Image 1: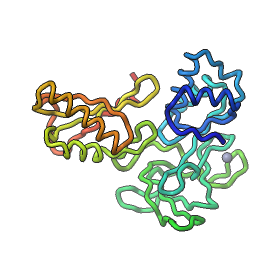
Image 2: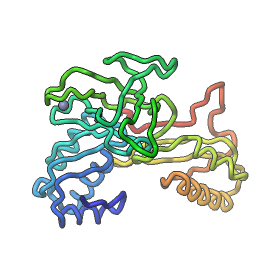
Image 3: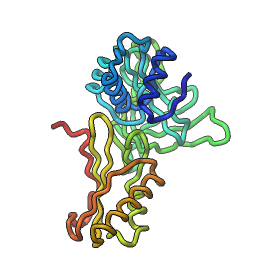
Image 4: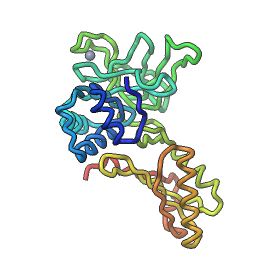
Length: 275
Ligand SMILES: [Zn+2]
């Protein structure tokens, strides 16, 4: 196992070659970024020992899976977990890749209606609820993951009877997953609100630059150019402190952004829009 954490793409590629890495574990978007960066450096992944990708921590599609498999010449598998329970390892796809087997020796999985809390049947879509049965020190009982999925009980083509879950299709709350990091819009809001020179009108725009998530925060302010630039730098640093993500900041004159007509949407997510 070669733990190298996130970022430092050149080093990741170097280690992959030096150690003859066979399995790549990261977010799907980073796998694509790494493939691109490797290609730019003249690396032919098809000639390296790498054969498997275990990818997760953000929503991804079948199309993205195919793109990753083509780029590396590997088989890519979806993995599911959450830091509150164990991190990665709650469930993973098997060779059949027909849903992720949940490790039922360790977790009881249920699906509930996120509005009413009522338990739903296998095959019905709702919020995933997990109970840990083997974990010591911090067990969780019927923990609401907020992840929306479906469970299937039928025997899998691989022979396993362990319950399978679909790809996670969304969240029942407003949590965003940016570069594999969990971020609530309220975290960014609290940073903006703590800076009195910024107005409490903001918008969060998520997009893709190449294969990577980009976070843009638009905020209104009455500050002039120079003071504005300082405030933007401070905001960027404060958001980095709270979320660990480098955001782009755009300062706008007062009354530029749309105002609330009841329920306002302060998040514009352009990442999974097909053009
Ligand atoms: Zn299976």
